[in-house]
Image (cartoon, rainbow, N blue to C red; front, side):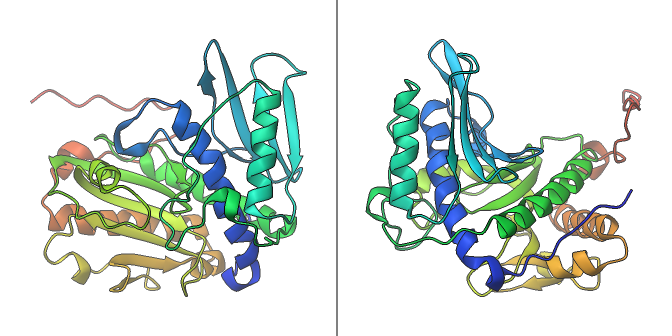
Length: 316
């Protein structure tokens, strides 16, 4: 089966990307404020849907609600468990962060949902609180749709890659703080205390997120002088990791980011994008697992297939 991997040049969609990053922080913080803490901040993430990105159901007393970026319809929707009339839709359009925030707050209040959030963006240097960010923000539905199409492909391949691991592994999910789609594997061993220092993020959050040894991979749609790319890193970084040879040939270790990277444009141009991306995910994971001496025999398995149960291993 073939799938489309549309062009996603960061300079072309930079303004829409910036707007969505900030708007997604507003939405994500609503989930954060209402949801019990889950290890490694897995309770704050968004999820790819057939139409965009969603918070998934959020509990609110004896009912629940969901906030969805519907990139197909060009709307932000709030849906509740109260019935068909308890829904609202806001247009995704060029507007300031302050206006987006005010409209969402009003919409939630109309539905009887009262949430207090921390109003300053996370993981962004020199962040401006949402109510004070009145800078005009451009929005292109065409670019948002391309971004969503890319996320659908990334989500599909990452989920397939996830099936090849028996150990602790994160869901495949979208972090609105760093604005990336990610999946993380764990060796089962604890990690040294993380140094913290992430812009506008409490050190306690970063340290809990990296409490255990990981090999993490993700997709980042670009920024800070970089075009869209796939990345893979290890924490803590084991000796010899960055010198490892990984696939495909277009991948390299970026010393500035301290990660292996693979340009999205290379994946898009490949004759088999899924296979290229899988080779990057697998080989960069193997580089981390080998360098850090993970128990690979106990942690790994073959990639999953539809309707085929995982065979049991004999007890040792």
